[in-house]
Amino acid sequence: MKSTSAVVQEPVTEILKIDKFSSFLKLRRIFAYVNRFIHNIRHKNPKDKLFGKFSVTELESSFTSLCKIAQQTSFAVEYNILLKNKNLSSKSSLLSLSPFLDDDKVMRVGGRIELSNYNYTKKHPILLHASHPLTKLYFKHEHLRNMHAGPQLLLACVRETVWPINGRHLARRTVHACVRCRRIQGKTLTPMMGNLPAQRITPDFPFRTVGVDFAGPFLTLNRKGRGARLTKTYLCLFVCFRYKCVHLEAVSDLSKDAFIMTLRRFISRRGKPAEIFCDNGRNFVAAAKEIGNFLKTNHEPVVDFATNEGVKFVFSPTYAPHFGGIWEAGVKSAKYHLKRVMGNNHLTFEEICTLFTQVEAVLNSRPLCPLSPSPNDYHFLTPGHFLIGRALNALPGPSLEHENQNNLQRYMKLEQIHQHFWQRWQREYVAELQQRSKWRTKSASLKVGDLVLLHEDNVPPLSWRMGRVSRLFPGTDGVTRVADVQTTRGCFRRPLTRICPLPTSLPDED
Image (tube, rainbow, N blue to C red; front, side, top):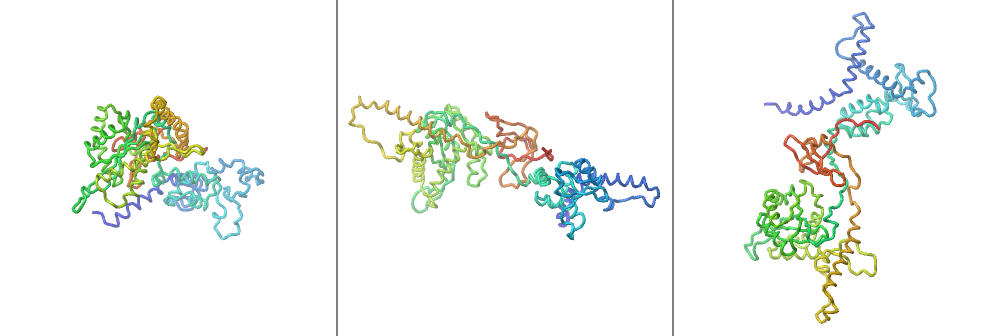
């Protein structure tokens, strides 16, 4: 059995290995071998030859030689001018740094801190360009040596020895390309908001296409009086895709039979829908975990019942609540009123059913779009207009009992009213749907084979599962919002909002 000190030292040893085998240190040691070989060839006396481990002077000389080669590549014109002891051109980008060549013919910054008490390297750092591979290796080495320093700290550490031209940009790119830093951030993709489906913007009858969601549980009393027990009651919400009409049902328990009876009650009152959209119920909130398990377990029986009734059941991708924003917003609005009315009180099942219907009436009486600025418009368009011709909490119209039936032409008037509602809906409500409220720009697109992390709730980013993208699912607008990711535990289908891309290498300069 390992001792406690050995267990504690193991992670520290792993961290130190990162710096030991960095590419910059390898390159510096390789060039130190080259310099030692040249030195030993020139000195025939065995006493003058160098053997064994490298000294600090040899490694510093190796780094200086590498910088000299990089300068001759990046600043060829300026280097040759300084080599001839001439002044730089007034158009040179290095003129503000007053560069000069030291005794080793290495270009250094002249600067204005010559009279300070800093060491020579601090006062006159070596000039390098950010586009050179040596500079990129040195930035990466300093980033790891300083325990994954951020861009500002990284640039400050580099400038202790080297003055990089366009170094701030390279510091940001180095931190951005670090896999470990990206894993800690856990930043997922946000693809541009997609186009609305045809069911949202095509006129049709209410509840022709609906979305279903659950909320709760709500604690209810099994009876009034002393000795009453608390039981769980759930809210089942049906929302119309076109007019945002809401239908609320109380469900006594999470079972297949209870949900099917709830669906039968909805169909009997609102008519049979053509399509029912629902999420996968993959929620990790403690209060909603039972709902998620119920939808996951009873997936097939519910779909079979809907198929027999001639209804198409559509499930959105796993962990993608934004695919059903319309019913998620409906649940939020219903909870807004329920929490303020119920508080900490416990109602009976009949009382909570009554409360659900009253909340339903309020939600079906809310404006669909901003109120018209016209002074002649006294009524705003509500979901209730498409159900009963007026808001559900509005006063009824005058009695038409004694009106002449021949002059009334009631059916034609009702049909004209319905057409008027649809015209207002198309003119006022649909126009409001044009704008994208968020995710307005296209983010970096994924490719098949990219290395990614799967976002998981209640788990730190370093523990997220890693995998590679095996398949993409672009939408009608060509934007990919769902992808299959192959991991060691199998293939998982996730939305891009649950996928965190990882860098493969430092991106090239533009």
